[in-house]
Image 1 (tube, one colour):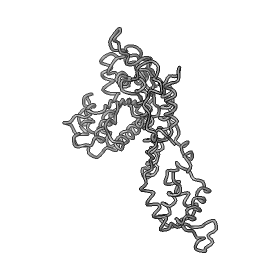
Image 2 (cartoon, chains in turn red, blue):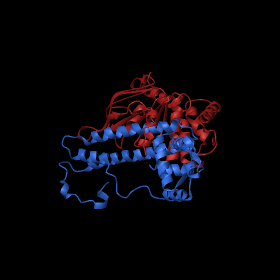
Image 3 (cartoon, chains in turn green, blue):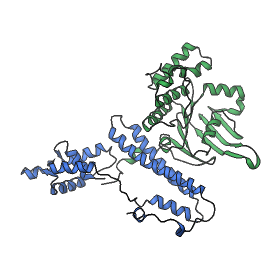
Image 4 (cartoon, helix red, strand yellow):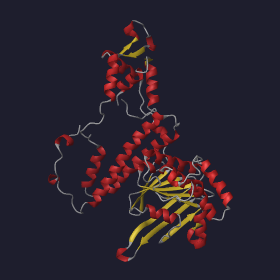
Amino acid sequence: MSALDVRAVTKTYGEGTTAVHALVDVDLTVEPGEFVAVMGPSGSGKSTLLTIAGSLEEPTSGSVRVGGRDLAALGRRGRERLRRREVGYVFQDFNLLAGLSAAENVALPLELDGVPAGRAAATARAALDDLGLAEGLDRFPDELSGGERQRVAIARAVVGERRLLLADEPTGALDSANGEGVMRLIRAVGARGVATVVATHDAQLAAWADRVVFLRDGRMVDRTGARPDPATLLGTGTEA
Amino acid sequence: MSVRHALLALLSEGPKYGLQLRTEFEDRTGEVWPLNVGQVYQTLQRLERDGLVTSDDDDGVDGGPQKGFRITGAGRDELDAWLRTPAIDVAPPRDELVIKVLVALRLPGVDLAEVVQVHRRHLVELMQQYTRLKEDASPDDVSLGLVADAELFRLDAVVRWLDAAEARARQAPPGEPAPVTSRPRLPRRIGAGR
């Protein structure tokens, strides 16, 4: 069963001559543990695709299934529960609450979902530890570097039983070393079975994905093949 | 890339044999740039002729296939000067991809965005390979990380140029492209290519 299955999704804002077609007949399937990058310039529809995949917005037509369940059939309450329990979101910034420590930020979605505080805190610490983020658990966001903040945001997005991680330009303004740290963490999350979709305009970021799909004017215009084997690079370099 | 100076750099650490030089060169470039033995010995011969290295032969010792090489004072000076010499020329190379996009822009019936996308996809696939090379490498392998990064930044620059080219072409007013003669001329030196 696919972690995410987007079928023939169209999203139109407005009507008639002023209508804006943000997405036109888009298909996207992501398997558990798979990492897909959606690459396109700003205005290409990649953020809209993420918000629809994460049920933050509804498509004008087409269907979205998360973990095999049709979002339209779930109803409002069902979708809310799915957003709280199964889907994690990471945005470019404004990810962490300033008044909570790193560990408390990660525990927050669990507590909001009714997990008792003690158990939520323990699960959060285990998640941070598992992702190599054990240091700085009790520091507040303004005491963390930009790269550390974003890694904590990713831990929060996948804490508990979340199976789908949706990230919109997750390395935003980070320098390349910190950006790489975030991407390595996303791959580590994928190795634990979480399906990931990253929207980005940045080819260096997209290159971490198993597959890259290209959006232009709301349409999926192209895609790469399966992640190529780097062995073909060795021994083919430019000679002297 | 300069095999000559790479060999001088390896010899600056101490005397070495030809085969050893080849192995160390490949190790340090993450095996991305292979060298054949012939290239190594040919380059060593020239370095010896130019007085930048000496070999066991010069000392009257018959080293046979295990001939040792040492860097000379002149070799160290040459290496030092090379490290500080800028490696990027002023005149841009005649870039085939730039030419293809320029042709696609003017050729009737050709969809520029589609041509650009074919190249973009190819570049991103290459970048996926270099990223995986870096991801799979041991964190201790700084050389491989550096070589992979160099390729990733270079390929990324080309992707960004394609993005910019596509955006620029979109913004251009519809209709026939302006005739070539109305374009401002590039300064001769920059446009000359190589």
